Length: 214
Image (tube, rainbow, N blue to C red; front, side, top):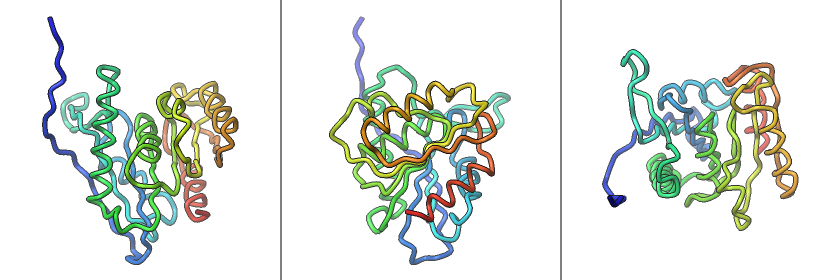
């Protein structure tokens, strides 16, 4: 038996919400978590204080769609471990095109935001994509090994969010990421909040302040 990777063309969904300030020139690119979709991430990100006023928001839906339990809602996943390197490359190319479709060529500042599984894609897009990032916001997801292994990339400031009761992005994983960021001398801030693997108002407030400081 032989295995072949066959290139094909597919289409992904990107929801774009313009900022109230049409001259802000700032673009926030959001990547959702496993079994979520672009609508869910759009609503979560829009609740960050100051985002709707100052940031055009592009919520990118992962390419691998499936039905949620009960087959009522279409959700998506970014990847599995199968053919990992090729899928990462495919996702990076897709995110580059999504940013372009959302006006990335005209943006003065682009920040990549990811929750859970989407945090890894935010790191990858910010550091391996075509567009220079002004910042990374990663909530409930660790720095992926392929990003840590590359020492040639120029890092923007990072805001890392971690729930103290998160059973997936555990305190041990947070500590490992903190050690990595410190060892590389990278500008970062860690927000540890009272919660689990989730968005909270506490983290949204911190993210809003951080975005304003860029």
